[in-house]
Structures are given as C-alpha cells and as structure tokens.
Length: 184
Length: 401
Ligand SMILES: [Zn+2]
Image (cartoon, rainbow over all chains, first blue to last red; front, side, top):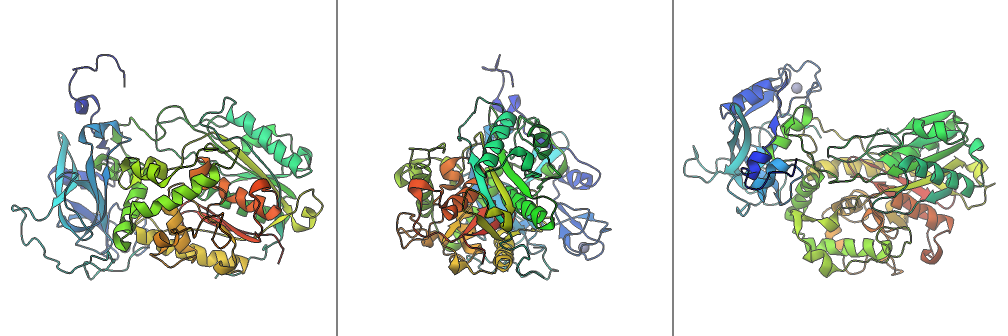
C-alpha cells in the first residue's frame, strides 16, 4: 500500500494480487478439487441434499452430524441475477474492472446458488435464466477459484440447453429438480 | 405462535436528543454520546441519577479494514454506563441487525418486567477516515473464503443482486427509483441537523450519476457519518408525568432469517420477501393493527431498494408493485392524499444513522414536536430498519389503545 515506486513497477495486478482463499478443515476438499478445475458441492449424509458452503448443521434437514462430503457437480446452471462491478473494495480486483458477477442456480438442486465472475466480459448478453457453466481462474500455483462462462460455447460439453423451460419470470421453479425442501 | 404483545402500549418514548449529522465530528464519539444521552434525559424532565436502564446496539457496519475501539468507533452500553452518572441496573446491547428496533424491544421488555423504570436508548455512528468498506486483505479464510476470492465482496454487490433480480422480474427500472431519492432528499433538505440540509436532489441528478455496482449508484447508498441520537423510554404510567406528550410503543417484530443455505451476504430476492412477509405479519399482530391504519410508515432506506422491499413486505402495496406505487406523487409528504413513507428523510436524506431517522420521525410527529414539518394527522406510525428479512420494525401510537 505504499505509494513510493509504483510508477512502472509492474502491473496493478502484481501490486495488488487477487485475494486467495485460505482453506480450512471443512473447505479443503472443495479448494483441492477447484485446483484441478472440478466444481464440487457438499452432500449431506443424512438427507442427501447439497450445500455450498457446508454448515455445521445441515441447512436442509438440520442434522448436527451431516458428514458432508464434497462431490463433483456438473457446473451447469442458470443466471438468477447479476451485476456489473465497476468499483471494487478489494484492490486485487482493480485490474479486472469492470466485471460481471452472476448469481447462478446450479442444475443439481433447486436454490443451490453460487456467485462468480462471468468471464465472457462485462457486456455479455445475460438475462434471467441464461445458461452458464463453471470455469476456473488460476490465481497462483495450486490455487484456482470458480467462475462462469456462457454455456453456448462451442467447446461446452453436451447440449447447450439441457434443462429447457423458460423461466423469464424468474420464478424459483426453473430446474424442476427432484430435490428436497429448501431452507428459507 | 404470535399475537398481540402483552406489552403493547405499556411503554412510551418520553424524550430525545440528536446531534448534528456530519461526515466527521471533531469531538470523540464517546464524549459526544454522553452529551447527547444527558440531553435526552433532560428533555424527558429527568436527571441521570433517575435513569436505571441503558440499551443500544453497537454494530460497526463496515466491511473494511478498520480497528474497532470502544468509545471511539462504537460506544457500548457498558462504556456509557461507566461514564453517564446514572444508576443502571439493566444494561444490554442488541446483537441483531435491526439495531434501533431491537434496542426498543430490549427497553420495552425491561420496563414492563420491572428490570428498569427509565431506560435510555441511543445509537452512535462513526465514519472512519479512509475508504469505508475497502479492505487490503489478500487472503480470506472463514466465511469470506467462499465469496471474496471470486469477486463477491462488500455491501454494494450484496444489495445489487436482489435489486437487479427485482428489476428483471418486475420490469422495473432505475428511473422508478428516482422518486424514492427525490422524496428522501427533499425531506432531508428541510432538517437542520441532516448532512443533506439544504441539499435536495433532482431526478436528473440521480440518473446522471454513474453506477458503481449496477444498478446501484452513490445516491442509492446512505452516506457514512458521525452522529448520535438518544431516546428515553418509561412505563405508560410514569410517561404522563413528563413534560412531553408520550408516544406509545404498540408492537415490534424482528426478522429471523434462515441463511445457512446461502453464501455469506447472499440475499436472493425470494429470501428477502419470504422472511420479510413473516416479519410484517408478526409486526401487525404484535400491535393489533392493520397496515391500512398506519398514517406515518417510515421505510428503511440505507440502500434505496429496501424501500420497495419494505413497502411490499408490510402490505402497503402488492408484491411487485412498489416501483409503481412510489410514482406520481403517491409518497410525496407534501400531498395530503399521499402516504408519507420518507417524511423524516430516512438514511438517504440524513446520513447513515441506521434506524434513527425513522424512529425520530415517528416520535417527533406523534409527540407533536416536528415544528415546521409537523403533519396535521399523525396517529399511528411504523419505523423500519435494515432489510425486511434481517432487521425489524416498531409500531408507535399517539394513543394507548
Ligand atoms: Zn441434511
């Protein structure tokens, strides 16, 4: 944060590195999988629901011994909301501004939501229900964090619109999953 | 189950004091708080020695890298109790997010239970030097590890997501929000202690401001300030002996959100409204009144979208309609046929005083102490705070019905 010697001394991104996650006992498997570009979610051994992040108490069945285990998920989902961040409170993102942040409901479970950057750029054509898939940003050796890209990519695997349905009204029934109850 | 509170209208607000609201007050926050609290006690016709209860909430609402020192950045009730010269036997702090409404509940419960006879309630807000929310942290453990590294950080993004969800779902626009800002700032411009005194805002100025985190611009956020306000509460029996007309606490309710299925600070619109509608139902039951009876509902507006979320949660307009409800002068406090939802200027028109502007407007109008701004009819009021799914609200009445 010193002002001295900043001119020409490397990129802003180098001066303010992107913040990295500090894994703990509970989150370590998630970040280890992310480093291999695999998105995981935590499954409760009691009610089989997924959660991100896993709480001490399962948000779906209230079990105090949920024995959450991270398992891979498809990384596919639909946009429930978004914002373009033009001013960051974290200097490590200054070099990325402006960027699009998307609130995504993953296909695996109703209301299983994640927030990440949409790497297609701030002017990407997004709407409620736009399909996306996970992508990863490599921040350092062995440190990658999830983000998203529009799912219409040629290199996306499988169909680009597997769940069908039009939820332009933004209702919460977009995926019609067979999932257990929701928390809230 | 819920229902009308046995404490309904058994406790009243009997005095107040309020500091000037400014970006940086040269006086230390603790000393300023002692002064304002003593002033409120005198306003109620009392001496500090008669005050036996102290309640407050001391949340310091910044995501930034700041140290928090008691008496400097916040003022806890214990800090004040040591220095006020009172005789406290009930000293408590509210830990939730609806700080002012939660503190009112503590005061009411203390008084009806006999734990205290005269309770002083205050809120002290401090604006730190430097960027309010900026953080130089470059590695996040704990809850923020799930959000900050992926670019989701700070309250603007927190409110921008449900706000945009609302805009997209109901076909609303930023233009519709201009009416909220114009009304809040029009009223704040008339309040001498407000940061925005004499500084109204036009719709054109609002819409010309660049967005910071779409669709939020700087005017959608209350400005951080230094400021202190205090109120004195006592039982309805004692209240009639004071120098001011009592304003009765008819009911209150607080949100009890379930968020452990969410990322930290992720507030989907459906979460806000589901828990908000529950908060409102319990609020009306607690006071034994209906939304249509309220003639002074003061919406919380620390971020402008909260105004819409509260209007709909409280049933003052249908869900999805608030962006239309606020148009065409229907919330203009200068029109006799309008619903004055921001007549006290709110946080957008005063500065970041949390739930104080809403509570103060309810008190001043119902006590008949609003001066030039006094409304011809103000009998039943509501003061909201924070988000409907996180905060709370209080119903005030001019009569102990
Ligand atoms: Zn479970």
